[in-house]
Length: 369
Ligand SMILES: *[C@@H]1O[C@H](CO)[C@@H](O)[C@H](O)[C@H]1NC(C)=O
Ligand SMILES: *[C@@H]1O[C@H](CO)[C@@H](O)[C@H](O)[C@H]1NC(C)=O
Image (tube, rainbow, N blue to C red; front, side, top):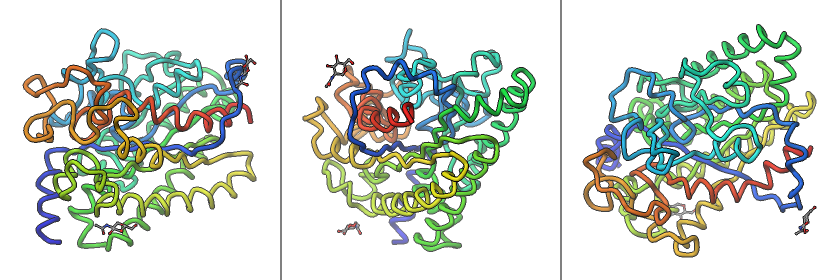
């Protein structure tokens, strides 16, 4: 265990950023006409880590290789712009906001060139490296979860100044909040400082408490519809497959690290369901989005989805491209739609689209209810 930890640590020290996605499978209704109802959602407001960071880390003074604002990131984004999104194209929140007819590309909050009008229909406070554990964001010197709440409060104040208190309140009550943390906590922060303080189980419990406080913080600032993303299996990322000895196989779904994330998922789901009872009293909703099942299906049947590989990163160096850096010196695949992962930790846009399709019915239910 000790040497395993050392390997994880040394590999992870150069990686830093991780994330997740999730959604529940609810049986689809015929919502072809959902476009008539989309006026009900006013905005998509995003919190989390690198899976949801649309460019905030560009504005933070961190090691530049920890950012995704250089080629070949964004190679499939319009005009091939590396926006800071940790993928070849858009992320899950962009796809959701686009589906709702709000905006195609959710701007990062720290981009000061965007005025409030632009941030009105959607904004991301997420920051690669962050987690439910405040320490995750702090030790990486990125936007921690508490700092994301602070920025959201600032955003709310700006809304109040232009729309009035009631106007801002209504706007936020009709907004969709997306939250995705946990991967950095369980893959990195735990194996660093926290391992001396907590058992794995104790740490998962600690994360859950933090998560609940975070959701409550959003609620107190006006959120009434929160979608919590389930963690993807941490042990299936190309780099952590190597650590766990499940490089080319779907056995990655049941390796030690994936078990750690799926055990946390169960706690997160229970916690979310419990909190939902409280939220209902205030006409609020907190929904657990099950992404693990659709993602596991991709990992088990990559060919079915038109992938060449579920285990090799499109961009990187070395065996299965798990080398830490995805940059202009890296190998890059020619067809990104053939890969589940873009770099050694983050999915491709195509993977996000498949995950969106899996949770679309959940989004539809939110629109019509
Ligand atoms: C869904 O509704 C649209 C129009 O309301 C209709 O054209 C279409 O056939 C329906 N699809 C199904 C699967 O019922
Ligand atoms: C992960 O959990 C499964 C059962 O859910 C178990 O069969 C497997 O041995 C576990 N993996 C490790 C590495 O402990």
